Structure formats: structure tokens, C-alpha cells
Amino acid sequence: MTTAREAVMISRGINAQQSILDWEEGKKHFKDSYMPTPEVKADWEETLKPAFYSWITEDFGLEKETVDEFWKAANEVSEGIDNQIVENYVNK
Image (cartoon, rainbow, N blue to C red; front, side, top):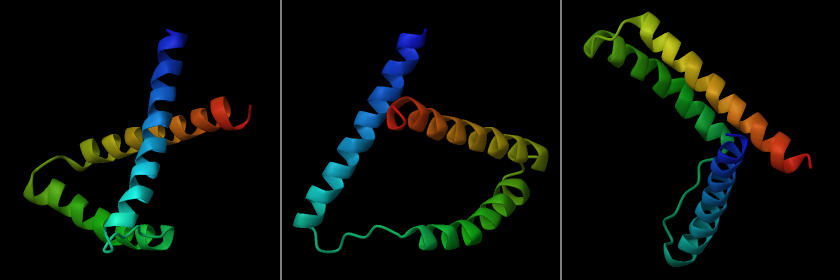
């Protein structure tokens, strides 16, 4: 099980690396490429997250508690993966 988990993490790392390399190569061929800065991403989140929350709960009809639980779980998984990547591959 440990080996399988490590293989998944390694494959994610390889995929992330390949995405970065492909992005850099694509910028050479397409002049209109854009990578938002962390500040822009934060602005987007500030604007889009409340709009999505309103849409998913009011228009789509999901219960607020369900959406809150989902976002909490997604954040925990994301933080766990980020911390595990750093622990396994950066701090060694």
C-alpha cells in the first residue's frame, strides 16, 4: 500500500513537471499565453467562490452544509497532498 501511494505521488509530480515543461514550450509558439499571478488567483477566488456558492446552493439546490463539508474535505486533501509532497520529495 505504501509503494502504491508513493507511485501515485511520484506520477503526480511527474505530471506536474511535464505540465510546466509543456507550458514553457507552448509559450514559445503562442504569443497570447497567460499565467495568472498568485494575486490575480486570490482576486478570482474572492469573486468566484461566493458566486459559485450562491449558484450551487440557491439555483442548483445543494444544501449549504453539503457544500461546506465538500470544501472542507477538498481543502484537507489539498493541504495533505501538498504537505506530503514537500515531506517526501523536497525535505529529503
